[in-house]
Length: 212
Length: 212
DNA sequence: CGCCGTTTTGAGCCTAGTCAATGTACGTGG
DNA sequence: CCACGTACATTGACTAGGCTCAAAACGGCG
Image (cartoon, rainbow over all chains, first blue to last red; front, side):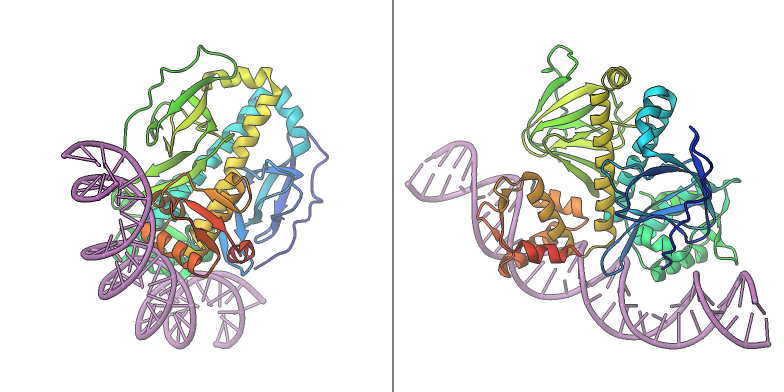
């Protein structure tokens, strides 16, 4: 696992809108326990936010894609880590400024509040998945969710993350993820393009059926 | 499963603080899909918030205890259901008033924002539990968490919920919950008082060890 | 072309689930 | 006060879904 720390130097001089940060694949934005000085919005690419157990087990609680806001905390430090899945660019907002920003700018306040509530709603949906869905249902839900969030043509998309990330997001192993994707491909639900990151949905209805 | 709807009549005349609602064991506060007209704060007792799948599988994403705020939504409707675990009393805040309240009252705004962020942090911790912990670890984590949240004397507490609720919260079955509690009792980690809702922690260190 | 990281596939195992029966607490009514 | 009924909890025997370990296949890139 890569643990290079992000270089926080390429921030533009502080402006109201926030400062841009660029990360390369695998670079870490912040670590669990770090002081929560900033929170972030994704400009392009994907961020994985995750928790680790002492023996290395990992749970990725969310993938943050363009527009998503994350990293805001109730307490003083981050409660999870965040890394770049691929090359990523994010905007950083200084948390100490949040007070002022939401006082002055009701639109911004709304944006932050709504984003936080949406993160919570996503988390709740994901708990149902983790606690109660079968492996097949987990994968089906994941594919439909990703399709909705990143596909342009609604039938085909490139996953930004690898099997290992998918497994750690869904509470499975890479072997199970791989097996079930193969099974779905064999039964004609999806098409696995050779690159293996590229997925075509052939039978959306059937996948939705597995969503129960 | 009881599906009596809460009687929303015993609300005091609208006041800034919100209106009190009393629910009896098993009564429903709101259902997934209901218009999210109010959000709530627990005064006493425990609320379970949960999602159901079409075939009846249930995931309880959280138990809300005294002081906890829940039921605030990004969109127009509730994304989960909420029921009284035992007899409960909550305060309801009209959501349409939120705007005004947080404009006028920075302390209240802070309270709501912090509560929401805390719910999110809880959800993230719970995803790690659901996705990556073993049954024993799940139970150990749950017991320690409950002890922290409801015990007075730090060594002993009464669980407000039954085995079935615990199972649906931890992504297990009642049989597994029961078996592991018995196992913990046999190895001296806990004491199961005859009422079976009453639990004494005998070996906190050992439980914390299982928390990894 | 050959190497390396990633993915796929296979064989066997184990944890937690299922199904079923028994045990326990508690409330009701005789 | 005790018999009974009901709801909840416990325990046991067996099963199965997903994990582990291991090996082979694939794809990208120097």
